[in-house]
View 1 (spheres, rainbow, N blue to C red):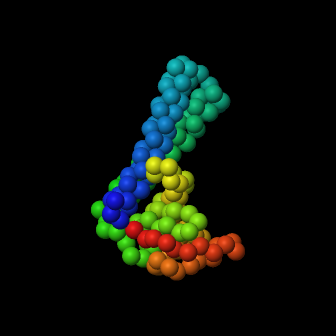
View 2 (spheres, one colour):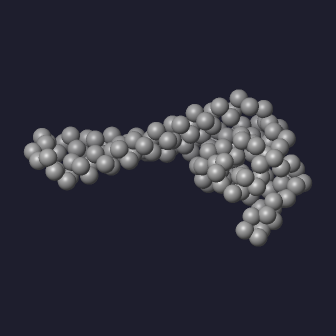
View 3 (cartoon, rainbow, N blue to C red):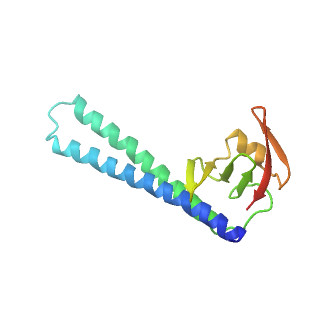
Length: 150
């Protein structure tokens, strides 16, 4: 598998995870709305059950919106060529961990390998930015060597 194919596979796996998150958030948002609707007419201005359902719906709507924004961002990365230095959109493999420098989506699997999608605000992203194969970073007293950048 070429560097480009591997990078595409990693990004597509992260997109699949975000699509799953979006799907669950959409289902929960719709469920909260339906429960509120099924509750009946609004009889009291301070109806705590309806308020709770609307807050729940709004929370899931935000999660759904964030997941969709993440998907769009990741899809844009698919259009970029492989990288030689660690920068936004690159897949970076160190001797300890594997990263997708993109959005803060956390841990996801590519086959049986664990990757972490990290955003630009994380200390590890900041430390990795601009690094090339063979260079090292130190985070929390632990040194990591960049083994591969895609």
